[in-house]
Length: 113
Image 1 (cartoon, rainbow, N blue to C red):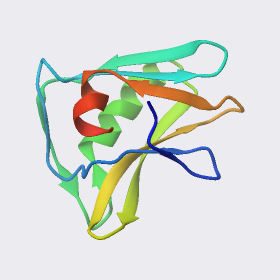
Image 2 (image 1 turned 90 degrees about the horizontal axis):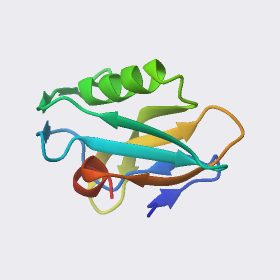
Image 3 (image 1 turned 135 degrees about the vertical axis):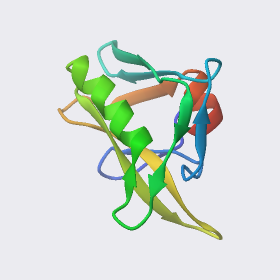
């Protein structure tokens, strides 16, 4: 299940990512693209630090490091949402022509969807 997909085909999360503690029970994440291509990562259990001034996130760095090690054509960035309450969320984007079709897993259920 995907949340919001913008006109640039980026998939936006729906949770504030400023305070994230990943445990052994919620670290699984799979990003699926068209043509049955999937990339699965398991995030190490820890509390991930967020620095709002340079908009730097240890969580985004960890996700991108694992995706890069898989030669994935997906990257993670920080997105700012300004609805009733302003928050920063994870955003996934494809780095080739294939669209993201799903973001699933225990991590996605708790921190993304």
